[in-house]
Amino acid sequence: MKRNPDMRDWIETLEKAGELLTLSKPVDPSTEMGALLYGSRDKALFFKELKGFPGWRGLGMAPANLRQAALAFGVPLEGLIKEFSRRGKKLHKPVVVDDGPVAEVVSNGDEVDVTRFPAHVAGERDGGRFITSGLVIARDPDTGILNMSFHRMQIKGPRKLGLLLVPRHLYLIHQKNEARNKPTPISVMIGHHPMFYFAAAYTGPADLDELELAGALLEEPVQVLKCATNDLHVPAYAEVCFEGQILPGVREEEGPFSEFQDYYVAGTGMNPVIQVDRVMTRKEPIYKEIQNGSEVEGCVYHKIPMSTAIYERLQTVGGFTDLLNVMILPGIFAAVVQIKQRFRGEAKNVLMGALSTQYLHPKVVIAVDEDVDIFNPAEILWAMNTRVNPAADVFIVNETRIHPMDPTAVEVVKPGSPLGWSRLGSKMGIDATKPPVSEPEGRLQFERIKPINLGKIKREDYL
Ligand SMILES: Cc1cc2nc3c(=O)[nH]c(=O)nc-3n(C[C@H](O)[C@H](O)[C@H](O)COP(=O)(O)O)c2cc1C
Ligand SMILES: [Mn+2]
Image (cartoon, rainbow, N blue to C red; front, side, top):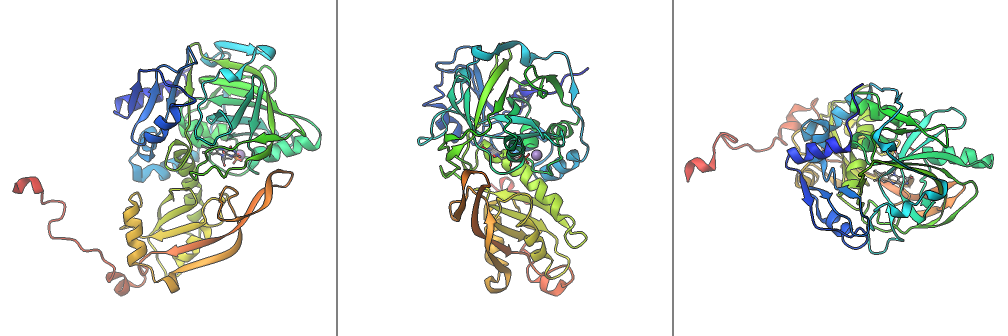
């Protein structure tokens, strides 16, 4: 059987495309790496030597931006969301294999020491070192369905990690187990092809197995190994995996942590605890570092699955919409939707749809036309300035549930509480579209200027 593409293939793809920088001098994950990652928004970074962590290498900012994400999917930037949606429709069940490189080096029970992972410190005020690239796999105790999601894990001891569970699927699974005073068995994967990361950040229905979605995005089944301490699986071609359990009824202080909005406002509080029972790595493992903050790697993983989910959702508004693209904007709390509006009022319906999907993040959504480059923030601002009549085109819905990491809103339920964590804020739609196709005369007034021979005349020919 052909092996799955892995993180090493991805490194090669980046290198061939001129998108990778190799750092040969030793880098300290606690004091130097965060600054290097946060500053490298144009190139992926490969760390050949990590101070204090002999035998390890590291990869970060990979993908560093949307352009590199499009490279992973092998499509132009404009086609990224459509391609994710297309691939995501054909799920593949994982296949169990007998052996894989992730199981080359194994430690069990008291031999386990996760403090040896070269996890970096992401921000000055962070509570310590966090595993930021861990994808947690768990099984719903009632339905048996697997779930895979991103969760930050604070390194607290050789076998102890803190865990942030925003109330979504893993939270629900743990809540069910906890009600029976049972731990939640988990397996965790660190470092693989980026499709695993895109799949894990996609919020679909609770019965979607994100490992099947990873297979869909890879366009082949994910090859997995059976775990030794529980009935879960780990991807055979990951760099690092571990097995463990989220302990029932245990809460400890966790955080603060540099989060995606570029703030430390991030669920710090009494959060669950993981006990690690078994660790597997490759012989010469490459650790996956993920820097969080605005417009860095963590955001790339947020933006693409979230844009895809919203894109899929909006296609059926009013039967169908002529929907061209969707993209999450910096800070993750806003999105732009690109439509060819057929009838007056259609854009506002689409905006309302985008403001209440499975993702709580977008609280501001802007609708623009097909002639606006949604990957250029100046173009979005241009549309807002020249196509919006504020009194008619902007609406605000007050007192809505918004993302719990949005500090503009009131925290009505604290993190770590049995009911989850919630904030009450408001949402805004901005219709920056021109008059609809059904009103051609009005539409004509918003036709953009175009010099004669634009695109054909070259400055170089006139020097
Ligand atoms: C870089 C990154 C870090 C994340 N960290 C966390 C986290 O610490 N806790 C959490 O609950 N969700 C976190 N998420 C969000 C979830 O992984 C995401 O919402 C996912 O869809 C949830 O899975 P689910 O739909 O199976 O519940 C993170 C997402 C990304 C992209
Ligand atoms: Mn899920």
